Every structure is written in structure tokens, then in C-alpha cells.
Image (cartoon, rainbow, N blue to C red; front, side, top):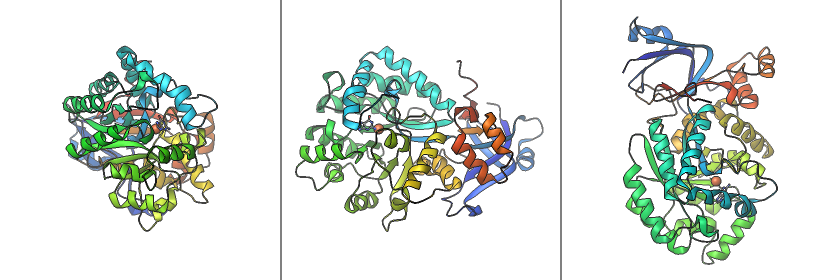
Length: 437
Ligand code: GUN
Ligand code: FE
């Protein structure tokens, strides 16, 4: 494979930025270079340095004056909900029954699953997202469609067939045994194939019987290296119904705890209304709380207290996500814009460096994939986004008054969307410009 050299303003994070002037938390090169070969970043630094290593004959792709960052990660998204987005007028449980379950039942048709998987990954790449943790539908074929499409594009994605065996229409139900068997077969076929990673995916405590929850626990014990993803403490009616279904539980988190579903690879969507005990349990187990601001606002679920979770004595690991189709946008820039507002409603702020850390290295650490993606470190996979803060007339005008990198990032977050994404590289290959409209 031939190598290439990307030139532009490179930005990558080394750790959480404590403050807006915590310069040693990131590496920024005004004239930066990334040498890519075999799908990996093999040299990073100033353009002059990297050019010296590459040798004069190397193909250079000049992205100046744009920013070059690690591709974004989305830690919680439902690929079968592309035609659920913008469904009016319901809170979580009604929204699931009225819109989501009927829509997901269409994935009985494998061809529909293949079409939506293709369009979904197109949309992710168009918005600068190179890795997702995705829920498929209950149907095995939906997960096969997702992985086949992801593998074909050589993307690093985490996904799983949803397990759900009650409190939903027949068209979206499995059984404890079929849920287990199909999950096992999918793990055998897809986990570790190329860049594909499997996540054991019980939808949430309401739609799994105790027998199925037990099976999910068995799967986690049999495959401790796998991710587990589910929903937790999103909405008050959901919490009350869960307590009715599991009357022995101390609280919602306790349900997942008793079935052995907490741990460092466990991703819990929402986590809005946690008690201190629940937050302690998540923290002690190293579980991840996934912040889904556009969804939480759209469904009226509540305000995730990002800064309190981060600063508490037993801090939570936090990821950020769109939660499409409860979420209202595919863009992680739009997501962090709404995240900023949710955090502001809690009387706090998230500065632009912290935001972009979250979208890249922060989410990669939360998903336990930061050795491969989420930075521009040498030796990692070349999943990269190129951002243009002048991508609309309004942004161009505002950029006239922008003086610092922090201001530019904040402008990108506040006004940016897919138009700000000039190019995306997946394992070194241009992927946005390759999409045929
Ligand atoms: N809880 C269980 N399933 C879902 C879902 O599809 N979306 C959201 N936002 N919450 C859920
Ligand atoms: Fe969700």
C-alpha cells in the first residue's frame, strides 16, 4: 500500500483538559503532518518533520487551512431508527410503543436491514463519525447487515443484536434461548473479524424477562472481553415500571448488578436519575454512563449532570452519544452543542477543549478502544476527520472575529454540522468524498 501525507492544522488530545489554558492536555500543530501507511498513522508532528521522515516522493494531501482531528466516536446509537427520528409528541415508553417497535419490526425483512445499514454508515461518515456503538434490531439479520456493511468499509464499529423477549409486539421479540443462540452465532461470525467488535445487547430491563437477563449475564461471563450495552435510568415512568417488574431490586442499577452486567466494558445509555448508591455502583465497577443530550431533551427525559458525575468522589466514566432515533441529529458537533446547554442548565460549563476531548479520545477511552482510535498517535488506525469552520455564510462571518483555537472549536460545535466535515478517512482511505449521493 502506498503511503500518503496529510497536511493541515492537527489537533489531538493526550488527556482530559482541566481548563481552557491547560495546553499540555493536547497537541496542536499549526502546520501539522500525518504520515499514513497500511491504514495506520506512522508519523505525526510538524509537517516539516513528518515530510523528512516520509521522503520527498510521498503523495501529499493538503487540507490547509482546515483542522485535522481524530474521527468522532458515537457511543450509543440505534441504526434501525433512521425513520423514527422526528416522531412527534411522546415520552420514552409511549415513543417506544407508538413509533420505535413498529419501525424496528420492519427489520424482519433482511433486505430492509441491508438498505438501512448502508444508509446509516453513509450518514455517520458524512458527519465525521468513524466509530459507533450501535444497537441493531432484535433480528439476527439486522446485525449481519450492519457488520457486513461496516466490514466492507473497514470501519471499527461495536454492535449487537438487541435481546428483548417481553413488553413489546411479537415482531420484535426473541426468547431467552434464541436470543442467546443468535448472539453466540453472531459473536462467532463477527467479533474480531477485521475491525468488528460485538456488544452483548439486552435492550433494557423492561423488555427482558428475568430468564433473558440471566442469559445476558451468562454471555458476559462467557465473553468477558466483549462490550455490554443497555439503557438505564432514562425516564421516571421507566424507572417505576422496572421496580414493579423486579420488586426485589434496591433500585434500577441493582437489576443489572444482580445479573452480572456491570463492568469496564459495560455501556449504560442515559443514567439521568441515578441515586448516589447507583452512581457509586457504576463507578466502582468501572461502568460507563452515556450522555445523550439531544435525545434527553427531545423525549423530555431529564438533564444528565455531567460535571457532578465527573467530579464526585467516586467519579463516573462518561461517554457522549447521539442516541438516534430518540436523538435528533447524526452529528456529534450538534450533540455536544446540546450537551453544552444541558450542562449549562445544571449551572456548569464544558469548555471547547473538554468537548472535543470527549468526542475523540474521551469516547475512545470510554469504549476501551483508545489504543486504536480517538487520537492521532503514531501506531494507531488512521480514522480522521477534517473540519472547516468556514462552511456556511454565518460561520464565515463569525470566523472574522475569532482569534483563538478555543473560539474556533466552540464555533464549530455551536454552528457546525455535516457541512463542516470536509473529509473523513477510515483506516487511511478517504470515505466521505467516496460516498455516492
Ligand atoms: N430504552 C429502551 N429502548 C430505547 C430506545 O430505543 N431508545 C431510547 N432512547 N431509550 C430506550
Ligand atoms: Fe438508546
